Length: 196
Image (cartoon, rainbow, N blue to C red; front, side):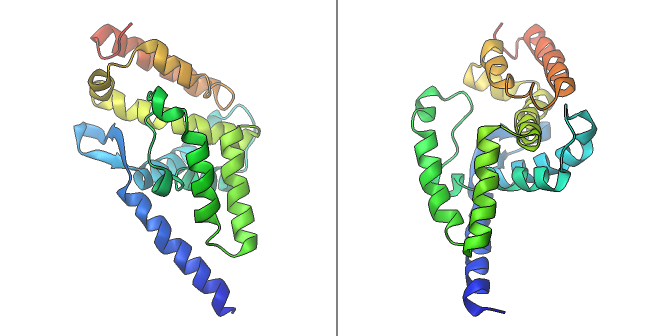
């Protein structure tokens, strides 16, 4: 065992614990408190495992779950950018790339390269695993918003068009999940939770 290697690994492990402190806009079911990034990532990973049969393509589920678990750790330094915050999106990529350089750079080189590559793969959406992980990233807050009668959408004045623009990223991962999302959106427009 290399002392330097395990020290770097432990340093990374302690650093990513801060993901539990990054609050998202989405509330937990039953309109509990706002969820944090670590809870979101865990939920996505479990969803990916349970719903993998609805992926458009065959996927390596372990790789997909790991992608789900690490996709937002850059927000420890870059902050969470709300899905419908157009101003925040303007510099989101540069903030997250700088954070990825630093956070993944804490690891030994082989693990740094492996996890950074998974992070970039998720971001690019160029593989079946990335597409399905991104579908879970989109579906998870839809499920929570729906369970809360659309209160997060109402709070932020979100329209159906805004949600659908984001959900286009779901289609390459799972047409089945996209169709379920459309049904949820129909219901929430009728209830007035989403602007038509």
